[in-house]
Length: 302
Length: 298
Image (cartoon, rainbow over all chains, first blue to last red; front, side, top):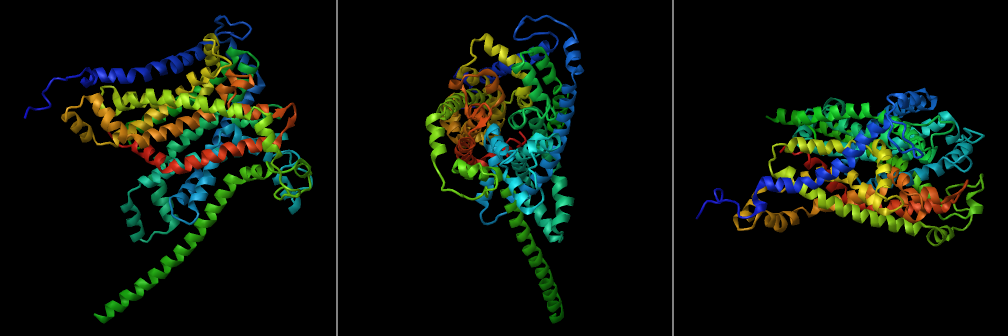
C-alpha cells in the first residue's frame, strides 16, 4: 500500500492553487467588470456634467453636487429616504419577529398560512405593488368602501393623492413586502437556538412573555440585526414601490433618492446629476458594510 | 412516604392545570396571530383575484359591494390579457432571461463556492466576505453608468442586456448559498473518491455534484425569481414592448394613457404571483437550511 498523501498530483486539476485560480477567476472577473467598473464610473460621473445630450466626460469638480443640493426636491427626497427606511424597518422588525414566532410552531393549516404570508415577498415587486395601487384607488378602493359602510368616512380618503396618506401608504407597502423575508431570516435564527435552552426555560417555568424578552430576543439579536440590514438596503435602494404607487408624487412629497436618481438620470437624461443623487446612498451602505464586517469578525452570524 | 406522594401529586396537578391554561391561551393566540398575518399579507391579492373576474359595469360602480359578484363573473379580461396584449411576450422574455441568467449564475458561482468552501485559500475567508459585500451594492447605485455601458456595447433594447447584467445580482448571493451547501458535504466522501483513483475534478463531478443537487435546485429557484423581479435595469435599458419583462411590461403596457385595464392588470399579477409563491413554499425549508448552513463555521 503506497501512501496517498505523498504521491505527486497526477492531474493539473489536483493542484489546489491552480484549481483555486481556475475556479475563482470567472466570478472575480465578472464582478470587477460589471460591478467594480460601473461603481467607479458612477463616482466619476458625479464630478462631471455628463448628460445623454453631451456624453463627454468633462470634470466640473463639485458643481454637480452643488446643483443637486440646491434643489429642494432633492432635500425632500433625502429626508424621505431616511424617514421611510427608519419607519418601515421598525414595523418590519416587530412584525417579522412575531410572524417567525408563529411560523416556528405547528398548527393546522400552516401550509396555507405560509403560502399566503410569502406572497408579498415572492411576487415581483412591481406586480405586488400594482395590487396595492388598485386597493388604494381614489374611487373604487375596497378599504374606503368598508370605511364608508361602517360610517367612519363619508368622502373617500384619496390615499395616494394627499402627501400624508401617500407617505403612510408607501411606508406600509414597503414594510408589507419586506416582512416575509425578514421573518424567514428570523425563523432561521429561531431554528438555530439549541433545543436544550428551550427545555431549560420550560423547566424553570418561565411564561411566554418572560421567555420572549429575557431569552429569545437577546439570543436572536444578531440575526435580527441581519434582517434589519437587508431591510434597510431594500428600503433605501428599491425604487419600484414608490415608482409604481406614486412616482414620487403628489408634488414630490414621496420622492426618495432612488426614484429621484431615475427621474433625473434616465428620464431627464442628466446622467451626472442622477449619479450624484444615487451616491448619497453610499454613506449608509458603507455603514452597513462596517456592521457586516464586525459581525463577520465575531463569527456569530454569517 | 404516603405524605410526600400526595404532596407531590397535588403540586404536579396544579402545575399541569397551569400549563394547560397557558397552552389553551397559547393556541388561541397562535391561531388568531396566524389568521391576522395571512389576512394582512393576502388582502390586496384577494381583492385582485376578485377584480380579475368582475364585469366592468359591476366593478366601476362605487356603491357596489367590492367583495361580491353583483353581476356574473367573466373571463373576458383574461382573454383580453392573453390575446390582445403583449403579456405572453413578457412571460416569454422573462423565462428566456431567467433561464440564461440561471445558467450563467450556476456556471460561475458553483466553482467559486467550491473554491471558497474547500480549497483552504489564504484569502478564502476575506474573499467570501468580499463576495457577500458585493451583494450589498444595490442596482440603484450602478444603473446610470450601467445604462451607458450597455449602450456603448450596443445591447440596449435587447434581452442580452438583462442577461449580461442580472448575474451581478445573482452571483454573490448564489455563491454564498452554495458555499454553505458545499460545507455541508463531508470532505471524507471526496477524499475517498480521490483515494479510489479519481482526479479531483472527477471526484467533484461524480461524487460531490450529485450531493449538491438540493443546493443547485435552491439556487435555480433563487436566481430565476430574482431575475424575474428585477425592475430598475429592465426599465432603464429596454423601452420597446417586444423586449420588456413581466416586471416592467405589466405596469407600463396595461395602462393606456390614464386608462387602467384594472381587471386584466390584476389577472396578470395573480397568474404570476401564485405559481411563484407555490414554488417558494415548497422550497422554503431548503432555503432556511441553506441560509443557516452558510453560517457553519469553517
